Length: 452
Image 1 (cartoon, rainbow, N blue to C red):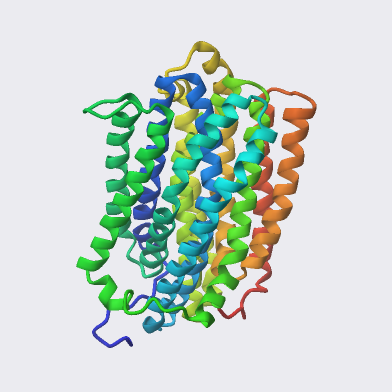
Image 2 (cartoon, one colour):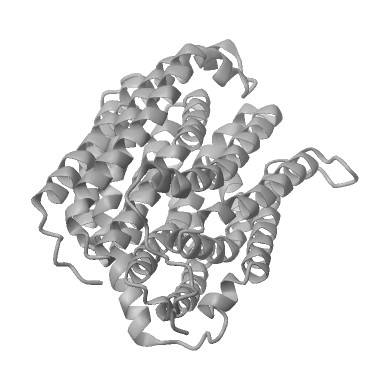
């Protein structure tokens, strides 16, 4: 299918209006599942402090596989955006279908790993054998949501890459509604359902992912997005496109997996410090996720817009565009930082824990809020590198940052047994280590002739 004069252009313009038109729907779409995470943990906190603590470990483990799909999504998004900038509309549907094929294969790997490898890992790393068994039982249920999550993430690449991010919120809102209903029903046993406790949260999440996937693909069908790009014309394997997607996506997938694995390592170290420290850190993960939604949205915008304008041969506009996105991202993050510090007690009180939780959590929250400011700049420059097509550079930057992160976390939390507030400062170090080389690489302009 080739483009015609009557087909709306997929090329972006460099303006604040265009930035906000792309990023704000993405922010809402990202924020909705983060609301789910927060609500999950409010329910788990009401169930028990132990359930809230376990939620941190299981949540980060699931994220390891979730970011595999996100890495595939980001690489695919850069490719689709580049084709949109070049007005090569006929290739968008092919790229999408091959991305779905790859995601199905990755989901099989994730399920197999969880059943056959993860139990040994958790039994060897967690100090409490009963907690390890509970974690494993939960994950063997939760991991069945991965195929639906992966295919669901492919719609991100398509809708953002073709400048239709306004449709994202429909699927995520559906997911949120089902997740809240079934969390309440299955964890506590309301509306005639059996009370399943912690495992009820796993089933609720799977149901919500299935429904979110169903609704967003109905939207794609009825908005004729599928017909326009011939998304479902053929799902036969096209190895040249598989290779192209993997070359672009695999370094990002590795980058994200390394990052989340290091976060799981961090939570395992925190588990050694006791239940309350783990519950506080789980709350911080929720706050990072929820209030980082705008930052990640602007980062996705940087990825797609940089790739799109390079496709238009406007390389000289890349750095001014990034600076403009950074200003918006930092502005939102600054408002969040102020809110978190002024209303710290109110934010933490939603978890329904005791005064000890508050006393330990508020200093950590102040560190996290400052880290969010640095993150709001760093992730824009890092995703701009993705948009240039230099995903191997992303991986190299991430690898160095993670080594520093792990060493700092181990020394402060495990070796010297310092307060977890000091341990959480690894987030500040991490984002600074990502920011500096990403900024220097973009400024070097060595990416200008990269073709993808």
